[in-house]
Each structure stands twice: as structure tokens, then as C-alpha cells.
Amino acid sequence: MKQSIKTIALSATILAAIGCGSAPEEKTTEKETVVAEKPAEPTGDATKGQALYATCATCHGQKAEGIQAMGAPALANQETYYLKQQLQNFRTNKRGTHEKDAFGAQMQPFAKMLDSDGINDVAAYIKTMPAATIASTITDGKVENGKNYYNMICGACHGAGALGIEALFSPKLVGVQDWYLERQINNFREGIRGTVEGDTHGAQMQQIATSIPDDQTVKDVIAYINSLQAE
Image 1 (cartoon, rainbow, N blue to C red):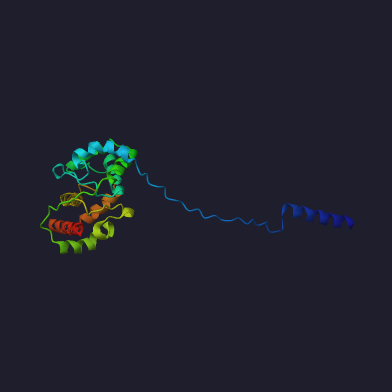
Image 2: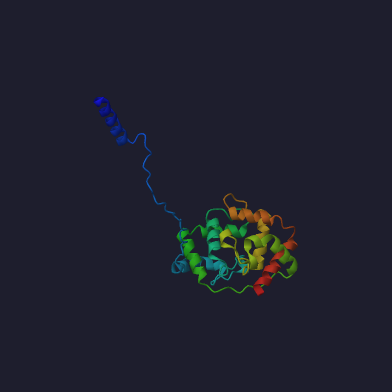
């Protein structure tokens, strides 16, 4: 009897030691919420960008005001995020490869002279330039028709007032020469731009542009954008 009691006691001791027959000990751990911060965009060095821009000035002008005879738009009025995106597109063959895009083809070799840091530097320098004065050249557009169509189709991406939306990588349209806007919209309509694999944002614009019914509607939309610039 004494031996049995000893055996039972010994068994209980062993079970307690290895934790059998009892609930595991719960450890309270404090959960930490980790919020991932978006890395800051490189700002670029405007001083370095000034030296690099010397090559760009031949077509885009000394103050990035654009030169119509060269088919080169004003850059001073455009947002930095969009300038960087398009330089990268030219550099990586996402833009300027179509056989009918003569101006884009001219832009490609210059963009390929820049690495990612160079693109940031050039964009930083352009940002220091004063806004360019833009003259209207399209006079046969109907502003009210253009306003209706813009608000129905374009405004969701390019924003009220055609100021662009960075989150969508959609460019600012106010302050861009109307002859350049007309060319680019038609390039999208005709599949000259926005059809290269990898050009996600261009593809979105290309789909929208193909829904524009005719050349007059293009002029109407641009006339409305011109009217915003005048405000």
C-alpha cells in the first residue's frame, strides 16, 4: 500500500514536470502594428540637372518653354512626377518606338543618355524654371461641347481644372500647348502611343482616346482646356 502511494506520487510529479494533463502556459505578447512608410521620392540635384538640360534646351528652349517648330512641348508647366515617368518611358522603349512617332523617336536617344539619377536631376532643374506663357493656336473648337465631354470622360483621371492627378500618374493639361495636346491625343487614338507592353498608364489613355468620336471633339476638348488656362 505504501509502495502504491509512492508510485502514484512519483507519477504525479513526473506529469507535472512535463506538463501533461494540464493546459499549456499562455504567454502574453504585445502585438505591434507596423505601418510601412512609403519611401520618399528622390528629389534630384538641380545644379547637376542644369548641366544635363543643356542638351534638352535645343528642342525645348532655354527656359523649357517649348518650341513648336521643333515639335517640342513646354516642360516648365508640367508636374515633376509626369516628366520623370515619360523620360523613363522613352529610356526603356515604352514610348517613341512606333514608326509614325517621328518626334518620339527623336526624343529616345536623349532620354537614354540619362540614368535614373540624371532623370531626377533634370526634373529638379526644370522645376526651378518659371511657368511658360502658352499661346492658343486652335481656334475652331467649341468650348461648351468640350467642357461637357471633358467632364464626362477626361475629368476622372486628369482632375477638375485639368491639373492632373499624381496618384493616377495623369499629367497636367493646363499649360501644355494645344498643338501638342492635339498631336498626342491623336497618337493615342491611332495606336501610335500607348500600345507598347509595359506602358500601363499609356494603355489606359489609349483606350479612352479611341472612344473620342471625331477630330472636332478633340478640338472641342482642347478649346475647353485652353479656356481653363485663361482663367
